[in-house]
Length: 323
Image (tube, rainbow, N blue to C red):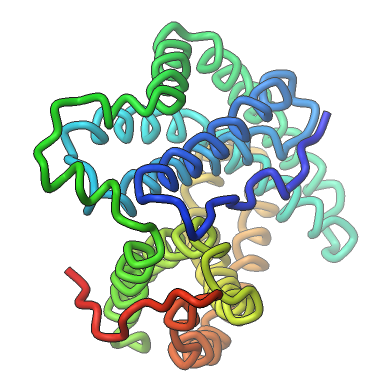
């Protein structure tokens, strides 16, 4: 069972209000989440856990992007539930990536095939446990309660049924293009601020930059239909390049902890030797990524802001202030 990647593509339109666009984005990503749940549950494809987790993160990001239009008292409880659920899926996803993008790629490239098989067996046993946790999550009353209540919240537009102050209700009825420009400006500026000075940043700072890039990426994808496709595509390409190197650096920074969980209690010299070789092999990848980071950052920082040239006759004032 699979789901097309296109199911995540935003279908908001320029004639929608902020409120309508918010509902459309949440509805689409909620459908992606529920569509991939059976795949994650039955472990028929490692994309299952990944797609459920991404959908949760995208919806949580949407709550942040639209925070200027909605009181946090209405959105924070939903965001907290999403953070919890995505966190519960983290162990399975980490092991999926470690096996498929680490050990499987190492096999045949290092003179430690027997040792790699041993380490892979340990990782797969841990993966089995992690997927038990995935099934427990999806079966849990807490998750089902979240899914049912959030689905109804989205379909009914329940936030708009609240006794909202007049200014809040007015903001929700504003046309979405102007709101999108301000939101994208804000996230773009946050990334630029988080990346300076890049050359002196440590692992924690690079992790924060990666998070800001991810938030910006989601915002760009939410609002992409409102603007020139070619310009937004180029911008997304630069952002993907930056995210790619930051992702490699982050994965390697987390690897010692993962290896400790897998072999820390083992005395088998083959496992210990393979864990060290794995860390060294991936560390070289991180070093190469760090070398390429400056180039990717330079390309991104010069990418401009394509949402300042919207499609259609309607234009967005160039002097909009970001709050």
